Length: 106
Image (cartoon, rainbow, N blue to C red; front, side, top):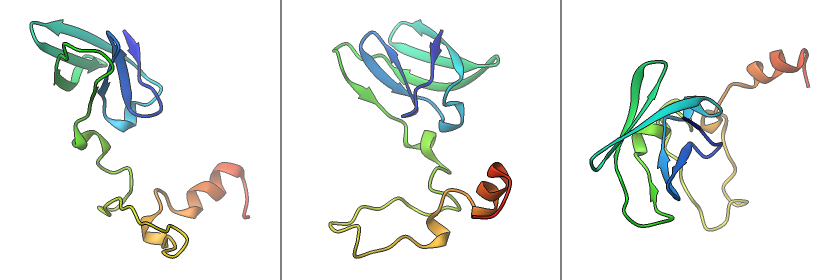
């Protein structure tokens, strides 16, 4: 059993393996069979990775991060983040959800 960390991974034998982002904070079951590492949650397999033989490797399946940026937008890097402001379509959630969470308007 492992707990999914905030960066969407679990640690097994000093290596990090990705898990779907919606499982952050949840406990998952890990089963190693041969060279495969199977991760399941609530009885359903959620990830399958090849076991790493070294240490401190990071194995990431990009599909595990689908939906993090929101509405199909791609994450991007710029050399100067100040020169290119974020637009509302790039936010993870609508601001209305945050207003409801805190019980009022900003």
